[in-house]
Image (cartoon, rainbow, N blue to C red; front, side, top):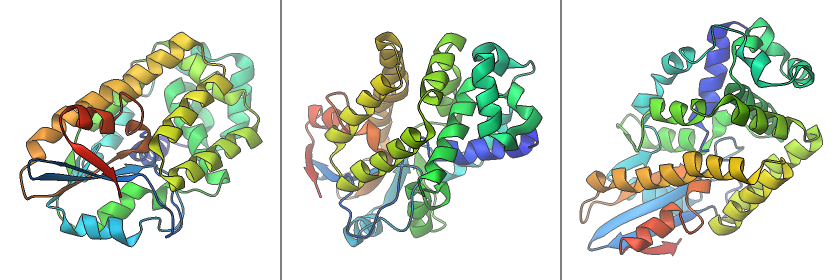
Length: 291
């Protein structure tokens, strides 16, 4: 696979990172909420980024139709620049060879044959994303039918709003040091393939059920299954979840006005827990209700 094609695959998965939106049947509940304060109304959908079918029940679609703005982690316009940003993160040297063991490199070469000679120049965090995408596909999930794409299709040609830039998303991943990237990738790679696929299926099922606290607790337990050290797990949570939750809520403010409902769609893992987006909104005086 050429570097250009490899970058394209990476971008497709990043658009659905969120860290995340796996698609469900029409009857699925999904993590869908409404927040209200002083005439301000926010519809909040927790997404997962590889999915199947059309999971958006009619109430969610109707809320989107009533909204004055669609606000996502990254705007649809910003997504168009991600390929260029990703291309700049390929290594000039054979960085993957210093970030993982030779045994892991051999296994990755077998699992991701399409990467070809470009594999050596992919940092471990990119390879982790590729592997997760492959496993999601084996679980019957597809990024092409991800939640964000479905929302944008319904939204049409109107502009969307973003709570962070594509560069900020990439920086969050790329800023982990080699040791952390190695632990993250090799911990996941050490799981048998059937276990990795089963984790994707379980994530999908929990997302369908719509309980964000259960979902977040499950996510933290998977860190233990991947043998991440407590310090590494905390580092990942802080950089990829908690600090971004704060950013989302802070950057949401300029989009809010009385009597102008907005629709906010961010990765489902950002909603639950005592540092989740819902808890942060409640701390600001919002009444948050599951829909």
